[in-house]
Length: 382
Image 1 (cartoon, one colour):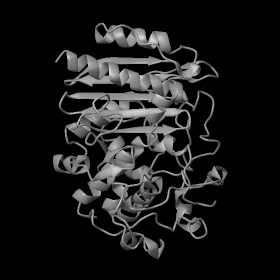
Image 2 (spheres, one colour):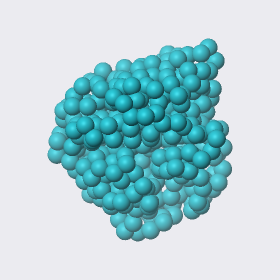
Image 3 (cartoon, one colour):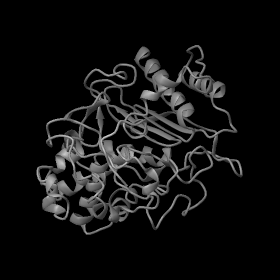
């Protein structure tokens, strides 16, 4: 594996899969038709009927407004073989929404006084390169570390096939990952590598594996029974068959068996993420102070969005401003091969939108239009 600072299309899978919505709508395969606005349930259902086939890979949707489920629907197939239909418990790779869960885990350790946001990475993981000396936990959380990306800046993705997180420190020498793009804290550049190191920090500080820490501290206490972390001991589908495959037919993503967690790796369902969002907003997972710290903007990340700690924030001027995000919003999107996902929280409207998909650009276009139609309807009727 050779890591170098390259500009590749892969970044769109992890940083801003939402950008592809505007790029792809001109393609015949991704064209979507938009029904005339009616009541929201009718509008969204008609839209899905016109744009999502029951026999294609599809999506699961849950929209909550003022504490009640406003709309819930599931359409398409989790797995093409056997025609396994998607339902509310179907698990999808949630991609970079995993970063939100990783960041919340860090905040739990902060609340327990086991770690500080200003702690230096090398004080916790001293075997990492000396070039990381000035990187803090806060820099990792906010994508301001200067770290290269082990996926986006990788010119040979097949080298990641079956690689586990425990192997990451040992492959840094000779890979180029020890080089920094800029002085930590001076700029923002999206980095999956930073969140891999945060997962390693969680393991070092807690004395537990990352999958076990999430299971014991987040998933099990709030009843997320269909949520787990993919790693070498638990692959997609090990628990049961109700997990969506990429494009309905592949366990591998981008051609490799992805076992590295922290920046991605969590599988969840709309049902479970609704429980997660409810517990988060009730401060059952972390305190209100911790959530406020996470959702405070730390600065821009390239041309994508302003970013806090594990959350995109609604501040700044980007393509999604007003259309899909408002100033007080906190949200995250995810994308990994055929998987596209979004978890969006609008505190001003008391609106939460959760959409998980497995049909690539086609379902991504549908996902953003569902969000736009929902927000437009609620704003026009409030």
